[in-house]
Image (cartoon, rainbow, N blue to C red; front, side, top):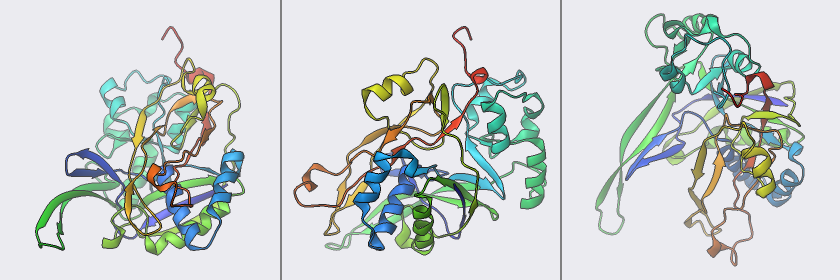
Length: 344
């Protein structure tokens, strides 16, 4: 397994629809977006994309890819697991828990392995980024020193919705719209993991994407980054019980839905993924929508996932190359003690 750290050199745009002619931006890069960017990089290098997608479909261990989550220095943030009970967290108010979006790696392990978190629940000492990030007190102290933010709410990134304008080439009329942008504090950025023989494929793709960028608005300078990587220990993919997902997950068929998604103690949020793609002539088309489980879901360990085809139907007679979204499940183990029992 390889751990990649991305250091953004410019603002990042991974859009999220929030209303008519308005768009916000996500604070991370979902695994399906990452895989799509890798596909583009592989295609530019002359790689047989179809064979790599087929290899991932046939053998999930060929390439398991997490989403690219935020990080602050070397403090890696994970999605807050859903559907788990916290050990000795009576001082953590329900409203505060609902605001938590990210937890540090140490707290992720404490939550998933049902370890005592009583000493890490103080609102004024453990929660930063407007309460959406939960860290240990030692991590907060270290980050305040690293980021030179001794007081106030510790900010790791900021998002803005900025006005933009397009000009009609026929009659020169302008059209105002709004788009989101994500800017990380210096020494902060993103991280992801790739596991399996295909991890080297991801390394090659990220090295190619550093300057061309990832995400949207790349033509206006968004998305450039610097990537570093190092070996990491494999995360055992649970075969029994339950697991927490570190990627977007698209269940593969009715049997998997029954065994993983509809398992008795599963908990998840569903996201609908749309977007655009280009045909061989460069014309933009709407992709088919696909529904997946968001990161941090608690699902049965039978979760495997698949890579759904989202090619527009109108293409199928004229375009050969595939249009897909990555939906394989990257799983982290969870102890049975952390699961919410029927009586709770």
